[in-house]
Length: 204
Image 1: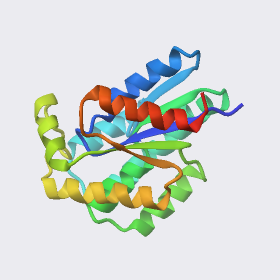
Image 2 (image 1 turned 30 degrees about the vertical axis):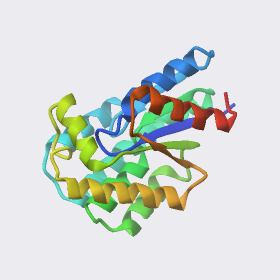
Image 3 (image 1 turned 60 degrees about the horizontal axis):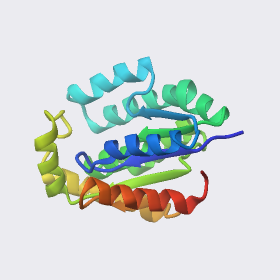
């Protein structure tokens, strides 16, 4: 029995993390095993890569190589075993983030990212990606209230505009997988949009 792989995407400050928690609770209350994880991260090795990624300056190619190396370990040690036993995996970011941040934001070669995606994932894609779409200026205001920014969160609004367009390109390329969630409004309002999208799938 194979489980479901659901990823959560969006620019920093879009509110995706709070809705991972909400969906995990919703599924758990219905008796499903839920594995919550994140990228970069999710395994001891990948969490060490995450610390480097978030706090050391590097170019776009180094960023991409690091996140795909962490992703490979994450897939092998966490995601694939959970799916094989029938669990639902909820992951805070996956490969769409790499295409949006390194490809869209940094302007890195999409062809190289596509090749790395093929090597590392060997065809594995999420069953559903919830893309929390929010205006970058509003996202910046939310980040300022929530936490001390890491090196990527400190980048300017134009960078996050490019990231947003990177996500849009991924959604247009895979509309059956990537669902746009309007992230404007209250948490409860956005959560209702998430529930509507999930329930339309008829999986649970």
